[in-house]
Length: 77
Image (cartoon, rainbow, N blue to C red; front, side, top):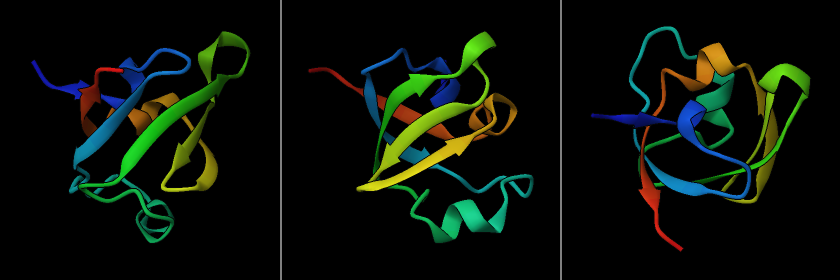
């Protein structure tokens, strides 16, 4: 079973393994949402959408719908 950014809980981190979906906005890729980069879930808005993330020292908020398109391997801390 593949995990996505949407599967992270607050404080958890993962390494992006695939972000090749055509439905991912180009702006996210430009901001570092690429395979090999570390992503950490910092905060969830009410109703869990959007998600506030740290990706390689860049802070951004993405919708949960978009987060389900980005595959990760969870980092065990």
